[in-house]
Length: 294
Length: 294
Image: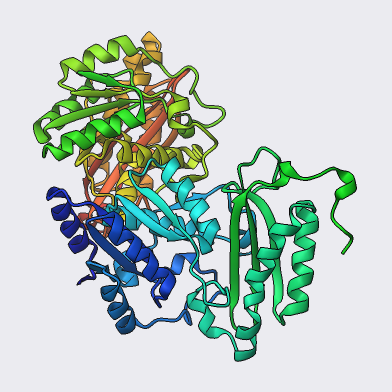
């Protein structure tokens, strides 16, 4: 595995690979790799000739009160894991390389952000879209792989690629989970022992919500989820939402896909999780069969 | 010359050319071509294997009170001119093709816009940067050619390409002028006969400003330009400015390049012009030799 730190070297390398007719699969990450990331790399390995992994903790996507400084980092471990997972190139630029000056231009995300994490993380998705625009130009991937745990991010990235006509295919990959169902995340290391034990209830609530949705409307389902999480964890529920996907608007019968999504804040970590399902709202029964009172 | 209307066809065509090892020169335009555009195409022809010209009057870069609807259009004439100038492909999408929906993402230009035309044309350069981001992904040019008459646009495009790491080289080409010095522009057709006669004074004022600058500071030079234009034309002076280039900030001795730029509003056309020069401020004489009082 080659490690490249400079944008110019990365672009030169890719140009050479492209000239030789090799396709490029790309897994952009902020490092502190876990099995979720590794599964993206394995998928990329199957679908492209060359796998490029980037590790860059992007300051632009962290708010002033967020955890940029204490975001977990372990480059030596990441390097080993990425190599084992089959990465051919590790792109590892520093902040100065990516943002030598205050940027003249940035990407603004105008939709799909006024819900879920976007609601409280002002500017977060602008930062994500900006760094991905840069990375896509540096790596020129044929396919880029993203975990659906960050489903809102995938919705924004699809908007970015569609609207800007990037010649890149976006592959959203299923969330990797621990054996008890907890979605893998770099931030899970910040859970206390007690919190870690409770954390499987996040996924449980998503499972339950799917069955609640066959009788309840989206608002009632959200209320039941909040109640369930408050009863089963010590975390603070930030949101439980049923929305259309990828538009992230209040669902209507015509929507093809729905997302059920949640965010729970524990003492030192804010965890998110979701499931994306076919829209079952149109299959709901009549008024009489409605959701039982909570 | 091939004419393509769909993004998909354009991307497919370019992919084929790239696979065959051909380099792509790109001249993005809003049509109503004049010799300025044609000189860009000729330059592109010299520097790339394939020349792609786009014609798209981009609604995103027009303000609500601007001339989008009455922007001059003549596709049949443009087609003939582009072909004669050596274009290999004319990309001519309609608005629905470029903006099928309200965009999820747009580019925001955060610097280089709070001066000159950007000051009065809110959102104009966001629209320019957004459409160019799309076009660069559709055409994948190795080099893109822009006229320096729109020097602020070139400054913004350089910022766009640098910040977003587009693998594109931006070539700023000298302004083409009529025999009396008037900068060529699609909007010149809107000048009355009388206005057309006066209009050469715009370039005259830029020439004079260069000599004024060797004795006067930038503010005094700007005042002299305004006075000159008010005396020699019936137009309304929107701005006369001496700024650093490409940052477009008040000039200091360390700046390498300066721009002297003006905008004058005539009855039915707003014309702009500029010259970009080496910074001569540091070579200015002592206080005693200062600018004579106007």
